[in-house]
Amino acid sequence: FSITGGFANGTAGTQQARGGGIFMNNSRAVIATCQVFNNNAADGAAIFMQNDCTPFFENCLIVNNSNTGAGAAIAGEESSARFNHCTIADNSLFTANQNTMRFTLSSEPVITNSIVWGQSTAFAGTAPLVSHSMVQGASVYPGTGNTNANPRFVFAAGANFKLEACSPAIDAANAAVN
Image (tube, rainbow, N blue to C red; front, side, top):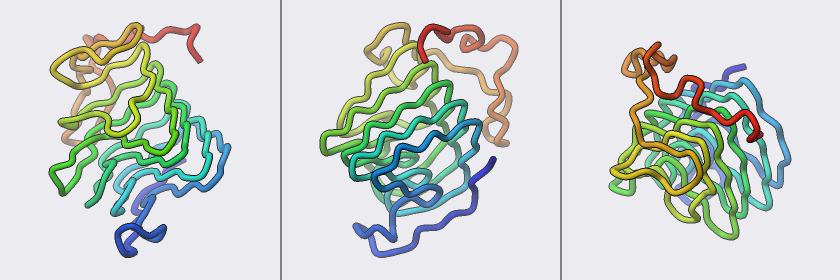
């Protein structure tokens, strides 16, 4: 399923300005095979989580979301989200604090077998546990099996995030990690 066109336009710092696509409060949701794109918010344009959230995202495409605050794609407070086989790419900010994900306040995010691409800084706040993933950056992000090799999307500028046949991401995931 797709979540698109959301616009959380409240006053910055309020719940009404968070989570343009998805807003979670004390949630244990499992979200699978979902596309979250073209959403807007002041904080967490695609997804905002708070108050002991432990959602699990599987095979999700989270792209082309934009905001004016922290956490271009995803922001969490006291949230330990898990992302497996997800592509989180080409989300944008309108401030200098450019990052893909921002987790704070006792958050423990986990990212496996995923691609985090298209931002100058992937993570802010609490560093996630990342393994067997492609994370854009000048150096390889710490963790087992990570790389900073270009995933080689077919045409990201045209919103085609399928992988080219020569992509180093093909068959690079660890099937034992779920």
